Amino acid sequence: MAAFKHPLNLTLTLTQILNLTPSCTLSKILNPKSPPKPYFLKTQCALKSIHSASKAQNCKNVIQVLEDRGLVDSITSQDLKSASSNPNSSPLKVYCGFDPTAESLHLGNLLGLIVLSWFRRCGHKTVALIGGATGRVGDPSGKSLERPELDEKTLEKNILGIRESISTVLGRSEEIFGGKEKIGDVIIMNNYDWWKEMKVLEFLREVGRYARVGTMLAKESVKARLSSEEGMSFTELTYQLLQGYDFLYLFKNEEVSVQIGGSDQWGNITAGTELIRKILRAEGAYGLTFPLLLKSDGTKFGKSEGGAIWLSSSMLSPYQFYQYFFSVPDADVINFLKILTFLSLEEIAELEKGMSGPGYEPNSVQRRLAEEVTRFVHGKDGLLEAVKATEALKPGSEAKLDSKIIEEIGADVPSCCLDYHEVLNRSLVDLSVASGLLESKSAARRLMKQGGLYLNNKRVNGEDILVEEEDIVDGKVLLLSAGKKNKMVIKIIDN
Image (cartoon, rainbow, N blue to C red):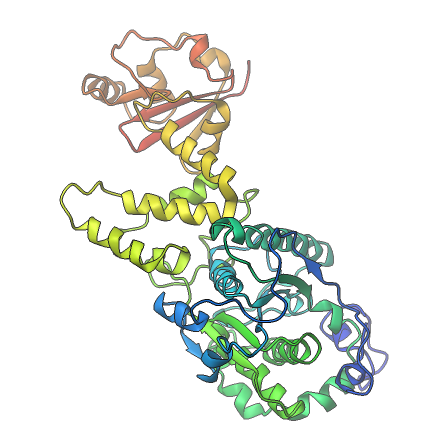
């Protein structure tokens, strides 16, 4: 970060103050007689669909669709409903922001992608905004502690990873919607492109003067932090103005009129609509929030709160992703189908009805949920991989195991490493204890007599059965199972 030459030197760029590096001045952006040069980079996703350039396609009001599915928490104006379905108006342009605080998006971000997809399905244009600038500050909303500062190399790596996640997932919309409907465009942008040379004095004069301190302090995210022992830094306090200005910039220069986000983003979103009204003296800017995706204990899914469900297959395999949804409790599964899938409400109602009917197969609705969400995030190939692994790992399954499938579950089940000579020609009773699957040989013998001990999904029927060379899958691994749920992956470290 550039050093101050003098404590009162406010001609430094705002990005230098917030540990950024310098590309456009605020006066150029706000001067209607001198439109800004296109400093930002736009990335069009490689989509097969063609955008209808004139009017939104004829579909049910997207706001009504979202409300029916429980995907609306608040909207800034009921006028958004009419604006989103006016046949005489051009399609809306909607944006959602994603800060690059990790190399992958997580399940908490998935709702933003889903809501953008619904807007696209109804013919509207969408923008996914990566917070290359705001990510250097950190959004305090919903956080009890200030986010750790990221170095430049990590930040750039995260931006590339998130850009890839967004383009890959949103690029599947036509596949998810059956390929029969025209799907609106999606553009990926980075707010660092217009923050790089923002001057501090310009920002304070042109934006800061419109921000009321009382209003900023009254935001729920701010009040919660101010009352905590940790408190809140000035940098975090400014976040709502930075996000608010993003909306103003996109409204003025990109004709974006709607910002969406989780319910914890309400204060940041309304900061944007207020700046647009006060600085540009314009109406027609709207905000929409959706409910946060919560864990069973009521806490938010997120990267820094623990228990993250990543959307990138490099950080969480499609099998592990699929298993999470397959394990959703009955009490949550119908709600998750409504908000996380694109199944019709009529079909979801039929699935719900079937859950209480005679002959219902337990977890069959969870299986449908897992299939739909995994297909949206990981595509057909990812879903096939997840289903194949799930079926192959069932004790008694006739499916052929390979080392990749067994290693796939290594992060979900206990595993151990044994030398080749410790495994070959060893009794399965001994191996069950040596690996830590069972506590004693007597427990192993008892389970074997009950038909509950499996080697590579095949039931072990005798105490004298030894591990043979062909039992070691691909010369790398073994899978021991005690019943249906308790498994042990044995990795061979010396062959």
